[in-house]
Image (cartoon, rainbow, N blue to C red; front, side):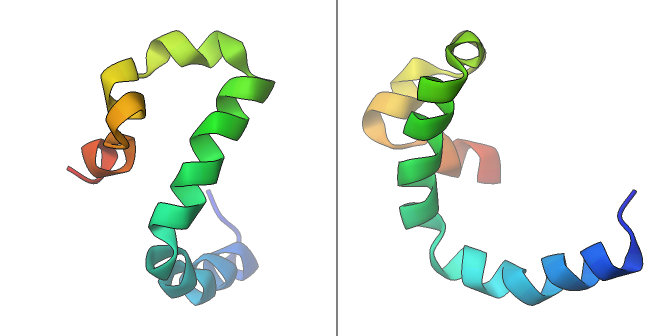
Length: 59
């Protein structure tokens, strides 16, 4: 559950995140796998290779 202030932050930053989603995810996944290699098997590696992971999560 988010606090009211956290909700405001999410709502205020969502448009910026959406605008830069490709750039964010290109950095996010490699960094996550580097820092937390144990989660890598939880993700479809074909999606990682072709850059399709963000699109996969968006539906």
